[in-house]
Image (cartoon, rainbow, N blue to C red; front, side):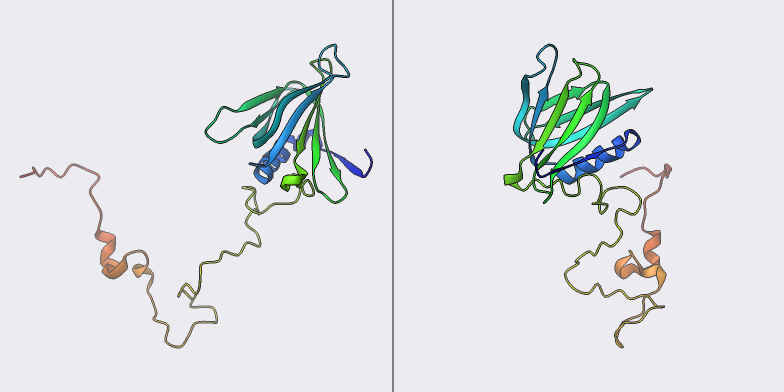
Length: 200
């Protein structure tokens, strides 16, 4: 493809790759097509057109791998496409990262190839598909470098660190989470065993 870059995803990275891809592109509009199914090696069969992506999952078992693509609006019927006996996964993307497609090849179904294309006009971006957006990935280190905006100062300062104002009120450990009750608040709980008392 002119102006396109292709990257192959190693088999032992498929599960992690599709998990990340789904997190990055969930809700983006996609088109799914199958090329070369059965005897129609030159025929393109549409599976889903311009639908929001729900997710892609890889199911590795023994030496085989099935990949499932699900797309459709929330609260409505979804389109589910299962690709059996996957043999190869590649990412085709434009040099600027706008748009692009996944190419998933199968040893079955007449060695069909499934294409999933992101809608570039709607902002679909393959620049970091499955490889670079670690934040909020759910993987180790996924929150690294994150800064949460809490809308101002929290009023909490560690005793061992700088930055506390001179009029900051010291708080003991027992006061956290107990409000005005302080340490006595730790006794505010119900019993887990029958008390033997009868209600009035």
